[in-house]
Image (cartoon, rainbow, N blue to C red; front, side, top):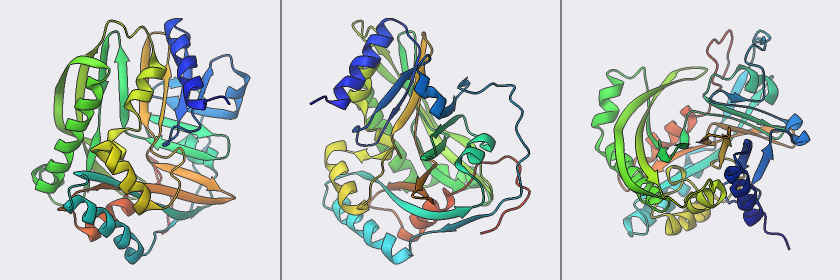
Amino acid sequence: MEDPKRNFAQKLNAWGKSKTPFVFLVDYRIEKPQAWTLDDDNLNEIRFDLNGFRSIDKDEVKSPLPEFQFYKFPVPFEAYEAKFNHVVRNLKAGNSFLVNLSVPTDITTNLSLEEIFGHSEAPYRFLYKNEFVCFSPEIFIKIKGNRISSFPMKGTIDASIPDAENVILADSKEAAEHATIVDLIRNDLSMVAEKVWVEKYRYIDRIQTSDKTLLQVSSEIAGILRDDFEGKFGDLLLQMLPAGSITGAPKPSTLQIIEAAEKYERGFYTGVMGYFDGENFESAVMIRFIENQNGNFVFKSGGGITAQSNAQNEYQELIDKVYLPFAHVPHIMF
């Protein structure tokens, strides 16, 4: 029986070696990875704009954003708290240092997935058939020449909070969480690179949402690929996935905690999307994700939990992350 994971890796390795441009998706469990060369007829079923590498004409005229409604129906706090408490018990038992806990939120809107994709203001966007749309702000890895870099995003705050930037940078829980992820990504990069270092530590990104501005904290970790890399992008991805920023540390035991706490299928949410243009490789973590489940829209979101986390604060953060990333909002309702 064909192994989809191995088949995926072999295709990317061959295309990378021959410098053949491609686009790819990898789901969270790495069970249904997909990849296309640019002459693949199946590309007609998808749309993407991955930091300028796009399936759409950059001069394409957008239709005006219509008046829209957007309602979100978060899981009850008590249901979230039960999952949160399971995670914290494991953290206090020493089974993990950091766990990324996510939940699905039912949403309703009069917009289609295609309309959401078309009007999204995000560096990485992907529309897969009528199954899901993703508008992610988080880079996974970039490769240019022999330099590889990763940009974990960990820590979110509402920009309207007084002195928000200093508040989140001074928060000891957020600082510990971010340090853990940076250390994990350093270890992950060390599997495929040498001379790994932290290029930039805890800088602020501004994310515009449909109802507020969020500040998110990121870092940049870089390294030099080994001489025998030779474009083996498939092998590299299998070594590094799932992404540390949406799992936690240490990764093996944390994955078990996530499965026991979440009790739902992430699917392509928190997987990775990306491209190779023949010279440069770029990818993003699939967060900010809306899935079509039999005609009902579900927005999947979450955040990092440490032993110092507050359940109410974490619950509010995952609700804040349920948004439409439109630059101009003529009408919105909750």
